[in-house]
Length: 314
Image (cartoon, rainbow, N blue to C red; front, side, top):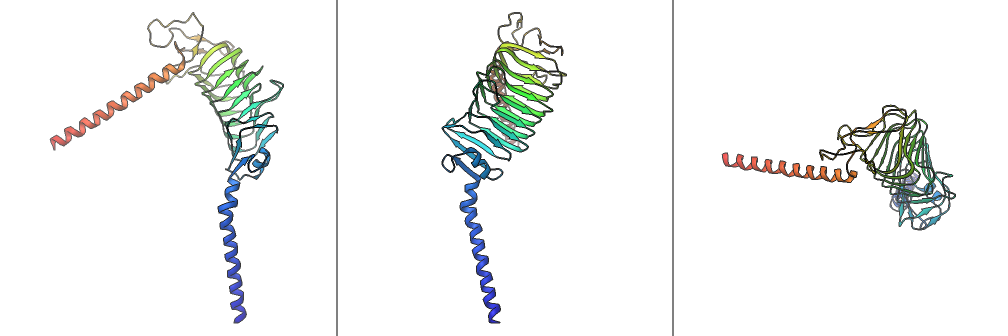
């Protein structure tokens, strides 16, 4: 009987110690693995990525980092204070990755991509400063490129290859280099709210590229080419296309904000912008926001009036 009591007490003690260890790991160790800061916690971005748990965040503070980076898990790579990376980053065979607030400079220009997305899905690339290099997407889906800046690359800013399809969205970005986008075998690209100042071809959609939608962009320079299938250079829902700077042949005689003639797109696809804009796209977003606000206030006024009338009648 006494031995059983001793054994039970020892078992209880070890159980309490184990539970306490788990609780302390949750409070201290687990949190350390959810958010890891470079260089405060570790010096290497790759080491931080290896240590952080799936769904965690690697914070990269201001500085210059010379290491090729590999991501193969679901994480957020977050730059703070505009850190700059001088070597390529590869995201492969994973999903749910966010890369935000980083700068990339690759030398010599145009040789290697800053970021390669390979056989991956559900990625967000946001607030990136890409210089002398580009982003490469291969066999990937559901990728958003947002609020990025591209400068100084002798080739395209974004290159899409392989069977990349579904929700490839490029928006609110600035392109100041040879080409903004080239796409091969891509399906369902959405390119909107961008400003493109290219020295050669702004956008090139090759023969196996299909069902792209390109609208509400400012094309300040460079030709566009379409050799694909069923690509639209306008939004039929909004009845708005793109702003084409410097095309004097297009006129807006009725003043409705849309040019009176469509804009022909170069290439074998025989595409056209049915609703070329008379002004930069931001002007149309403002007018639509004003209309939405006006409609909202009118609806509130109607609801208030109905409530008052109902109260008086009752």
